[in-house]
Image (cartoon, rainbow, N blue to C red; front, side, top):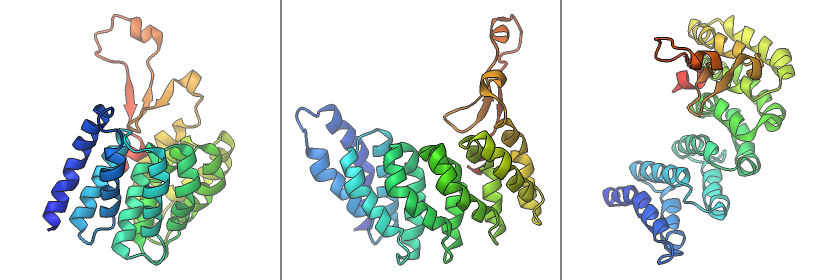
Length: 270
């Protein structure tokens, strides 16, 4: 019964945590018995079971309970199969979504070598706009996961494609994550490539795209500032913040906080 398999998936993370804490008594139980079930249920015929399996996988990755070998040899191959060009539409949408979510939890080498080529292919998927939309919405997170060199070499050309997509929702998603993409690139790329691209979004024929671009204008401009002098930094939750100066911290101001937070494009997208 699908409901039984779904309930089972919901119990996997707490069982895995228990086994990790009791590892001397159960050294291989998780890897031999539980992890294969999670991987197998990623391709279950029931979408609720698959969803539960995806959520369990993300929790396991977040808790650092999955071995690197299992990620590379078991999880990634399944996701690559599900996101292949000839894969079922529903499976492909789910696979690209889980790829984007897990990218920030994996090592840069694993993401760049195993998942980045497929992500670039999915950005140009001509069959499903939903796939391109997920790629656009999570573009900043992928850039952050692979770093500057891979972003400028492989991802920026794809970002240009998505920013000129015929579907306005794609262009809007790009405008919302523009700051996160810009933050990963060099000052020269920001000036010579991203600035003209941003102007095209701010001049878009769709008012929803223009509105999203104007909302991202301040955060985008902030990426041109020198962090050491401006005090700007990116929090883990994707917000752009201004670090208060020592003088502000030591002052006897009645203000509860001098920290100013600007909601970034990635936060708006959420």
